[in-house]
Image 1 (cartoon, rainbow, N blue to C red):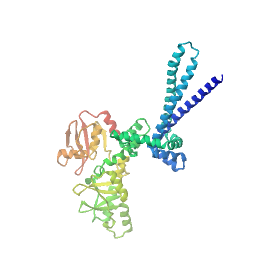
Image 2: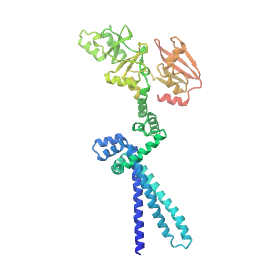
Image 3: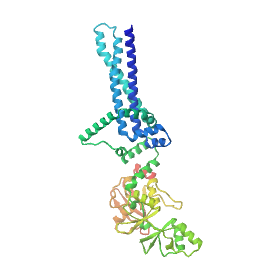
Image 4: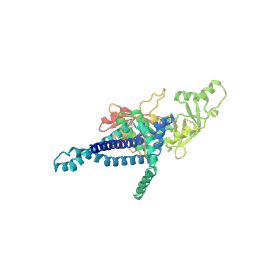
Length: 451
C-alpha cells in the first residue's frame, strides 16, 4: 500500500509540475505578444504618470531584442519540460488504467494507446492553454499585459542574461553568414506604406471615419507635393504697386477680402513684401502721413519645386503666413499661404466671403470643372489618360493643345471625350465642361459627388 501511495503522490506532483509548465509557457507567450503589440506612447504616458509597472514595460520595450529572446528561451524551456514531464505522466496514468487487461492486450494498450493519448492530450493543453489563449489576451490587452509581465520577464532575463546574449550572438552570426543582418529598432517602425494599409483596413472595418483617414494621408503627401501645386498662380495674385495710396490699398483689401496683400515695384517679378490689412486700417484711422512702403513686411521667396513639407517648416520657423513662389528663371510664379498648405491636410477651407462654385461637379451629364483643377485628379476620377507630366492643371492642358489664349466655346478633343471652355476671366480659363464619350460612369459620379 505504501508503494501505491508513493506512486500516486509522485503522479500528482508530476501533474502539478506539468500544469505549472503550461502556465509558464502561457506567461512567456503573453509577454512576447504584449511587448510587441503595446503602444509605446501609451506606455510612456503611464510611466510619466508614475506607474512602476509602466516603467518596467518601457524598459523591456526599449531593449526589445534582448527581452524577446528571453521570452523565446522561456517558451522553449517550458515546452521541453512539458514534453518530458507531462507526456510520461499522462502515459503512466493511462497505463495503470489498463493493468487489469489480460496479456497481450495490456502491452498493446501500454505502448500504443497510452503513448498516443498522452501525446494528443499534452499537445492540446500546450496549444490551447499555453499558446492560443495567452496570445489572444495579449492582442486584446497589450498594454495591460506588457505591464504585468515585464517585471518577472526582466528578472528571468537577468538571471539567464549571458545565455540569452550567447543565443542572440549566435543568431546574428548565422544571419551574417547568410548575407543578412538583424533588423534595427528604426526598421521595426511602420513604414508609410504599412500605415497606409492600416488606415485602409481601419476605415473598411469602421474603426476610423473618412475625415481622419484623409487627413493622415494628406500629411504623408506633404513630402511629395510641391509649392507649385498648391500656390495661387501669378495670374490670380491680387497685389498692389508700391506707389499706391493707402486708400487704394484699402479698396483692394475690401474687394479681395485678403488680410495680406503683396506689394511690388514695376511688376510682379519684383515683389518687395506684403502689407497687413490691419496695419493699413490703423494708419488710415490715425490719419498719419504714412506711405505704403513704410508698412511693407519682408516675405520669403521659395522655389516652385520646394516640397510643402519643407515649406511649412520654413514658414513656421520664420513666423510668416505667406511666401512668394519663384520659377526656374527667377520670375514670380505665384504666392503660397499657410492656408494653402493646411488645406492639403484638412481639405478645402472656405472663407466667409468666398462664394466660388465647387472645383468639380456633375450636371446634366457633363462634368463642370475649374481651370485650376488637377489633371492628375481628373484622370483618377474618370479613368482618363490626359498627360500629367507636361501639365499640372486642366486649363494648362487646354492651353497647350490650343496653342493660343482660348475663348469661351473652344473645344479640345481627346481619346474618350472632349473639354469645352465655358468661361474666361481675362486670359485665364475659369470654367470648363468635360463630356465623356461613354457618358458618366456610376463610380466616377459617386467619387465626384464626394469631392
